[in-house]
Every structure is written in C-alpha cells, then in structure tokens.
Amino acid sequence: MTDSALRELYQEVILDHSRHPRHYGTLDHASHKAEGYNPLCGDKVTVYLKLDADGRVGDIAFEGKGCAISQASASMMTDMLKGRTGEEAEKLMQGFLHLVKGEDASDLPEDDRERLEVMGGISEFPMRVKCATLAWHTYKNAVEEGAT
Amino acid sequence: MNAPQTIAASFDAEKARADFEILSRTVYGKPLVYLDSGASAQKPRVVLDTMRDFAQSEYANVHRGVHFLSAAATDRYEAARRTVQVFLNAAREDEIIFTKGGTEAINLVSYSYLAPLIQPGDEIVLTVMEHHSNIVPWHFLRERAGAVLKWVDVRDDGSLDIEALDAAITSRTKLVAVTHMSNVLGTVTPLKDIITRAHAKGVPVLADGCQGAVHEKVDVQALDVDFYVVTGHKLYGPTGIGALYAKRQHLKGMRPFNGGGEMIREVMKDRITYADAPARFEAGTPPIIETVGLATALDYLSGFDRAAVAAYEHDLLTYAREQLRQFNWLRVIGDAPGKGAIISFEADGMHAHDLATILDREGVAVRAGHHCAQVLMERFNVASTSRASFALYNTRADVDALVAGLSKARGILT
Image (cartoon, rainbow over all chains, first blue to last red; front, top):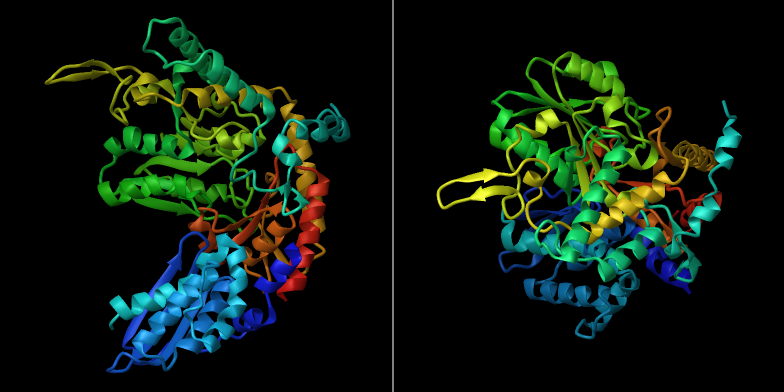
C-alpha cells in the first residue's frame, strides 16, 4: 500500500519534469520576478515573468534547486501558466493548492485537472506539500510585488 | 588492557533497546528504524516513569514555598544540578546553570558574558561546522556591537585544522566558540588542544557539547573549558531542559540574562540587586519536571560503561560506512578520523528530501536538509544532505534497513 503511494508520488511524468524541466532559465527583459525559498529544506526557486499589458502571462521561466517535487511542480507550472490571463492563472493556482492538499478541486476546468492530477499524490505526504507549492507562491509574489 | 571485543561485549544494545518502548512501534506498517537521534534522542522508560512519578507525588514550585511539597521539589531540582555537575565533573554545583536547551545556554553566554566585553573590531573565532545555535548568537554581536566573526575551515575529510584555528586567534580575539562534535560531519574536535592553545593567548573557549556529551564522557575540569553546553533531549532526556557549565570566575562578573522572579536579591522601586549564580541566570519558574527527567537520563546513561557504549557506537558507524561503500552513487560527507556516529551523505540524482520520504515509508527515519548548518553546506557545496545518526539503541539491523531503503529509493527515483 505504501509502495503504491510512493509510486504515485514519484510517477514518470513527475520524474521527467524534474530531470528535464521546461522553461528553465532566466528571461531577458522580464517584467516581474520573485525568489522563493523554503528555509526548512533549502529549496530555492526564481520565477521570471513577462506580463502583457492586459496581465496575460506572455512568457515565463524559472530557475532553481530542490527536490524532485519542487522542480517538477515549477516545471509544470510554467508549462501551464504560459498564455493565461491573470484571472485564469489565479484560478489555476487555487485549484492546484486544493488538489495538493487533498481538497476539492472540482472548480478546475477538466483538462487542467487532468494535467495536474499527477501532482495529486502529494496529498498523501503532508510534509512535502510545501515543496509542491513553492513555485506557485513564488509566481504569485512575482505578480503582486515583483515588478522589475 | 581489554581487547576491543571485551569492551564491546560489556554493553548489550539489545537489552538497552528494550528500555525504549517507542522502538517497538511500527511506521506505515514497518518496524521503526530510528536514525535521527542527532536531532533528538528517544527516551527510556525510566525517564518517563520518573517524571510522571515525581509529578504525581512530589511536585510543587521550587525555592518558593515553605510547605512540604515545595521543599521536596526543591530537593529534587537541586539534586538534579548535582547530577549534572557530576556528569560533567564540574568543581562546584553553582557552576551549573539550567537553561531550556543548548540554544539558550549559548545565547546566555553571548548576552551575559561576551556582549559587555566587545569593542568594535573584536573577534570571535568559530569553525565552519558550527550549528546555527553556535553561530547566530555571535552574529548578534557582529550586528549590534561590531564584532568580527573569524571562520576556521575544515579539511575535505571534515577534520578541524588545529593550526588554522590557532592562527585565527589574535590579540583581538575575545572568545573561541567551537563544537565538541559536529551534528553533520560527526567530526570530534580536539577540545583539549584547542583550549590549551586558546588559553596560551589568554582567550576563553566555549564548547558546544550538544552532540559531544552524548557520545563521550566529558570532564570540564580536565579540559579546563570555560563554557560547556549540553541539551537534555539529545541525552535521552526530555525537551525544554539543558545546562550551561561556566567557570565560577566568569559567572561572578556576568550580567543577568532574563529578568524576573528567582534571579533577584532585592527589588525596590528605584534599585535592584541580583542573586548569585546559578539563580541569577534562572529567572522564572524553571521546567521542574523536565529537570528531574534530565537527571534521570544522565543517571541512565552513566549506568552504562560509557567507553563500552562509545566502542559499540563506533563499531556501528564502521559497519554503516562499509555498507554504504557499495553504492558508487553515494558520497559520504565527513570522514574525519575518530568521528562520532553520524553519517551525512549526498546521492547522485536524488535530492535528500525525496530520499528521506522514500526511507520514511520503509519505516526509516533520517534527517534531510541543511541540519541548521548552512555555513558548512556552503563549505561542501551542497544544498542539503541526508543524515543518519546513531544512538546506543541502534543495531546493525537498523543499518541494514537503511541500506535496503537506499537501494529502493534508487530504483524509484532514477
């Protein structure tokens, strides 16, 4: 039983994202930027954004060091946020936060939920939820306080 | 005189193990393998029973009342001080200050002893392997009083370079603050040599014994150490209680730390006088039950042949080190000669937290992270490590479970 929880946590999609993170690096001329840090485990992530005039995520990238969960989550986040309006992004984030805490995430549009479901296994590991949410909180910080 | 085998034979780990009820529990359906005693040790039955018995039959506040229970509790509290005195072989019982742990003890020395002596530019010598609790109180003096922190490096094997430490002590040095045993590397520092060299230049030494006192017998008089710090919960005792040993000559001049009841002689509207040590540094109602628990834990530990326990732990460490050698993807950080029973390691392609999560599901509790030693993490260019730390109740079977868990983690993560 515990093995299946582990296999679900570390499934291939997650390991693939952590080994080959998407949108990894910096953005030239980023409009927003924030650094996230989890002092407990030393995980670090920097999120770079290029927000369009209407608040849409024109481009996004991240850099960081950390566990498979934090890196995979950041990578998936960048994949999914690119092109979203501010409102859509906020909704996605809230749905994600619900999902990783094992709460009701039925607000999420179905295809988003399907894509994010691979992160759902984290809800069985409460000590690791912070690893999964670090990038998202950092994104939010960048939008709200990170204008460059 | 005795052959090593004879010494090891005089300590029976299986028997000691039975004193720790928690070790028979399971975690996720697997037997608990507790390899995190460096963070906090489990408590033997006698400690828990004694605390409960004391609370049920002799408890009241200390030093206050004239009633029967207050006298009984005060006797136990002060007897605990003598137990710590004997445990560290201090010359006098009033050289033992109870604190809430190692952190508070070091903060006390920083505030009460060193801060008033610091002029801008004065130096405090530290090693890069200190725990944050033996770094941050000195950073306070850097920030607030202009002290300069001078860092002594370790060699690649984690051993301390005594010549580098000696060279770091100058005419401006006001204190050497050094660990007795690193909580990450397991390195045991040559305390006697450090103290002799520091004293030759007129500089006092604080030794952080939070790890060291657990694994070897400490004699503060033989060491001639100025300040020595221990914490109860790593010594198989309760949380919330620790102790500072400080030489009488230092205590006499030290200003009070926390203000409140117990630490005063007389309080008037416009003036105040303070009690002598140790009361001067023990403001407020102390953790009385925990203090009794600490004394019981020290008695428990002292009931063993300490040299035999040390030999046993060393044997366990050697076994673990050999077992881990089979993994060419694993790098042990800290291989200093004579090191204590702690192994920190990094694994290729596996972050310490992912590793610890998988080991946890196997029932194996290890520590993952920076271990409150970020300066050391930087020295070895790692963000975090996994750490297995051993206590007298660990066995080779625990090492085997760790090794099996590591193989499994490798299979899942790579």
